[in-house]
Amino acid sequence: MTMDDVLILSDKADVQPFYWVTEDDAGLDYCLSCARRVVAALHECGQGEAMVDGGSWANSEGDGARFCYRCGVMLRYSLSREGLDQERHYFEENGVDIPLTPAVAYELIQVEDAMQDYGQTWEKSAMPAASQKP
Ligand SMILES: [Zn+2]
Figure 1 (cartoon, protein in one colour):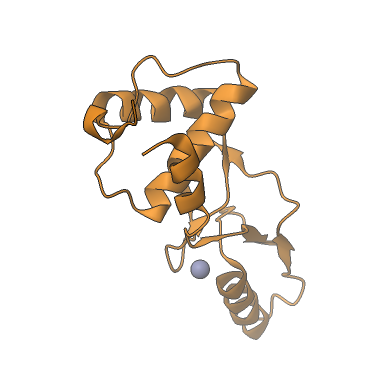
Figure 2 (figure 1 turned 180 degrees about the vertical axis):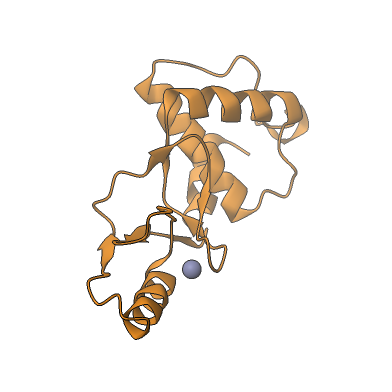
C-alpha cells in the first residue's frame, strides 16, 4: 500500500466539517446536526442568542484527531507542530493495522500534510514492510 492508496482510502472516511455553538463556554466541537440540536436545546432554555458557528472555512488546527462531542463522528482537522510530533511518533512506534480503515487513512494523511508543512519526512514508515511496493 502506497501513500496514494492511503489518500484514496482517506476520501472514504466519514469526516465532517467542525462547528461550535456560540454562548457555549466549554468550546466543544460538534458536527453540524449535533450543533443544531444543542442550539435548539439552548433556545428552549431561554438562551436565544446561541448560534451555530464554524463550518468548512474554520481552521481546526489542533494536537490530534477531533471528534464530535455528542455523536463521536470524526471532524476535519489539521495538526499543529506539537500534534504532528505526537501523531508521527505514535505511528512510527506502533505502525498501522492492515487492512487500514478510512478513518486511520485520514489520520495518516493529516500527518503527511503536516510533515510537508513543517518540512519533515518519515524516519520510519508507519506501513508494515510487507505491504509496501518495492
Ligand atoms: Zn455529532
